Image (tube, rainbow, N blue to C red; front, top):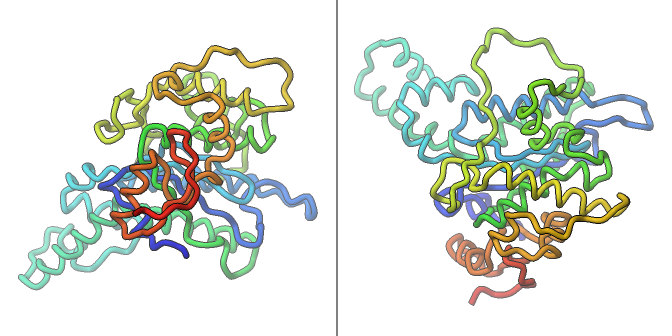
Length: 345
């Protein structure tokens, strides 16, 4: 039975989540339809531009992304502390960028006096909007609705464009976060679309590598005209801050140099059609986290299949499920041991 969204997303337990969405009936999100010869490549830019714009509005950071032909992956981090520090005017300003807001909020922003009833209503609205600005459900709703409408207008059709709202996985520890980010960044290589990180178009790893090289050229796609009426710059990807604990940092708890070393090693190892052998020296992050090489490569290739709605150490997964009212825990723990469906107690 499908779990309720409130059982799968709890920012107090972990701020990191892997979300996935796929087109209905294997429709084309991006790519090229060989039957009709029609190209949908420009839609990849829609996804990337929109997640960057929404990340600027919401208190949600983008850790990793990959836009494929008929689906996309995101690794998101909820910044609850940022949401708590927003002033009433900041909350209203951000929320009105994605909705029409409310007449009372407009009156308040214009500096007009409010009567007691209006003030009470405004307080309720601000509290509700502030909570929504750190909600992955609302983030995904804003993303998927706009992409679906643009695609349907372009295809001159109506109806559902996505299979559902989205699927999510809670990432409970450093190993789960690392494996999931690697799984997302290596999607084009694993699918055989490309054979290098630099040519993995519309992925976060390509964006991070391009940021290191001032002379790099981003992929050429058909982009809509730039809207100069919204000059606010997009938020950059979440930073690697090298902190030692998942819940005691402001970014991703690894050093980017170590992540780059590991993803390069993993990317070469999972390409069975590539000649040569892999250096036997294990990357630094595997040694620090105590992960076996074979278990790591298996996770990098089949992360989504190995885990259900959560990923982490077995005891952490069980605790998360019990806290959310679940009775069964399914998947492989991030510390390697395979645990088939088992009751929690």
